[in-house]
Length: 117
Image (cartoon, rainbow, N blue to C red; front, side, top):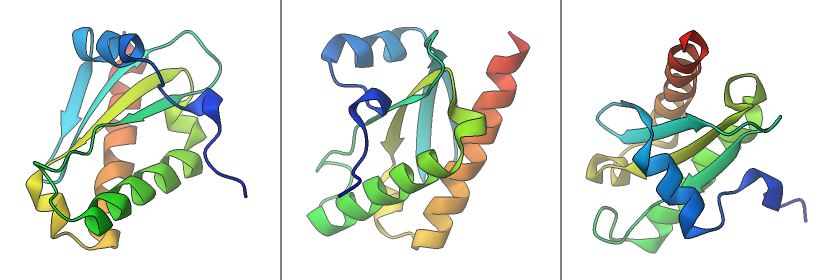
């Protein structure tokens, strides 16, 4: 099983906190994505998908799966950055294609914003 490698995950509360404290934000009606440079050659992803935002576990898992698939598919936008993805309640009702389009757009926006700094 391939899975999602540990090197590509935010694992510790301090890593999440660092992103929340010094983040560049992008978002739309489905997702909010926070990002900051990490000084590494690869990107890292953290997911904060709570029951309060998305009640059904199957929908939470779908959102997480779509975000991870997109993260793996776009190393050109995610390299060198830490991300935390926060879904909005509308994400629970969105189609997979809408979620994918939303997250793909957020990677590009954040990459452009952080490349300028």
